[in-house]
Length: 317
Image (tube, rainbow, N blue to C red; front, side, top):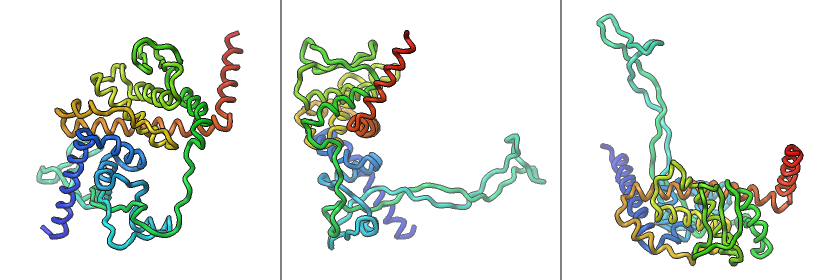
């Protein structure tokens, strides 16, 4: 085996070990909030690469390859900086020998009665180790200012609440709730109920949490999770979305302590499955929220909704 091939395989094995250790660590230590917070910053990366970035550089905020920093941001990686190792897909073509079949999927035989073979060129995908660098490891031109979704938390509260109600797949109401629950999702009634009169941050977090239950299909025929797992998923989605919104929406006061107890007997694939689902759901809610919130800010969405309601009323007459 060539030395370069061996070195590549050793690196891939190292990556696999990092992934398994990182996944287990996410759920079995107090670092869960840190991991989720870091991974929420990289929606374009796979969950595997998010875990690798978070495990090697929890403070990362913007990562790019060496050349991309130069070509797109006019920044250079500082001397003696070590890259953050991730997995990069690689496509390649190769000639392979395949059996020949006719249009009816029957083997084509040669004069000796053996099935014919042919050489075809096929495209394959493999993976290789690659390295990215965080912005704190670079120097150069200032980065473009990224506007946050909410400009002022107090003034933006009503807009954010309205946008969340609009993207909810089910009806939302604010009511007095008996007991200690801040909200709940009723699959049977297809509605979300949020405790009225709560502080703004708690109201927003609870809304996202309950929308998370709906988007995760909890309570449906597809639901295969126990109660603890469902609550962890929904609260993780709420924390993730709040992190992506930013601007002071810190929901980290919620305790993730019971996660260790839930995960201790689970295997890495089981834990990974939940992280994949959490990321996918949080990304989906965030995209919807960003689109609708921009319309709410300009009143477009509210006007569209009013027009739809007027049309419905006309048809019902």
